[in-house]
Structures are given as structure tokens and as C-alpha cells.
Length: 168
Image (cartoon, rainbow, N blue to C red; front, side, top):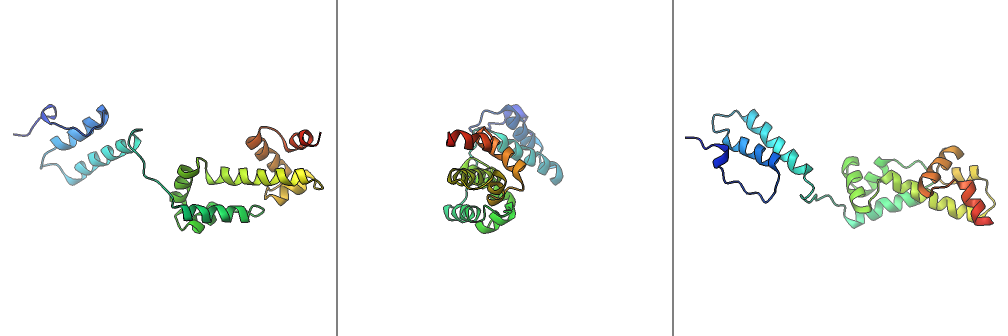
């Protein structure tokens, strides 16, 4: 006689009724269940586990890999650096690198690169002698409007206003 779902003493240490129901359905399926059916319920249970906030996610990047990608980003600020370039420097796939980078730094590779470019732009503007368009190109932005948008997103003000406040 096959047990009912209520008879199963399941205790995974997680208080999640949806996951509990999925595991009980899989356990009660019995031997006559097709492999496709069992795999379907197992995949649903695994996906539910991945979405639980209390389940720790092990997604890390080795410090040396992170350092190599950060060094490449710093060295090539004036150039067009792609996610593939940064991932290759770290020796990881683009997908894994992007997720691990965010987990390690709290920001995406693109946001980090944009912040680095804005920091360099600040130092160039403080040094003086360059127009905002020249600063934009020296920091790897496509044009001054691109620079202004990125700078405003990072600092909350435009480059012209930032420079004016620093010089006055």
C-alpha cells in the first residue's frame, strides 16, 4: 500500500509549504511513475529551493580572478571594455563572471566600470585644462551626452555643475 502525502514524515528544516507539497508529490508518485514525471517534480522542487531567501547561495569569485578583472577594467578605462573581456581576464564564462562579480562587489561589472570612469573624470576635471567633451573621450565615454548621463547617474549632478561647484 502506497503512503498518503500526510503520512510522510518529511523534515528538511525549511518552512515552505509549496516546497513541502512538491516533495510530498514526488515521494508519493510511486515506482510506476515515468522518469519524465519524476524529473519534472524534482526540477520544480530544485527551482523552489533556489528561490528561497534562507538558502545560502554559493556563488563566489576567487580574489585573484576578481583582481585580474578589476586591473583590466582600470587599465582600459578609455577603451571599450566588454563583459567578455573582463570574464576572460578572470577565466570564467560571462554569465558566471557577471553573477559572481555582483555577489562579490555589490554591483554589476558595467556599473563598476561606469563608476571608475566617473572617478577618473572627476580627477581630470579637477586638474583642469580639458573641456567636458575631451574628458568624456579620455574616460571612455562615446560622447559628452553619454558622459553627462552616466555622471549624473553616479554622482547625482552633471559634470558641468560638479566642476563649477569644485572651482568656486
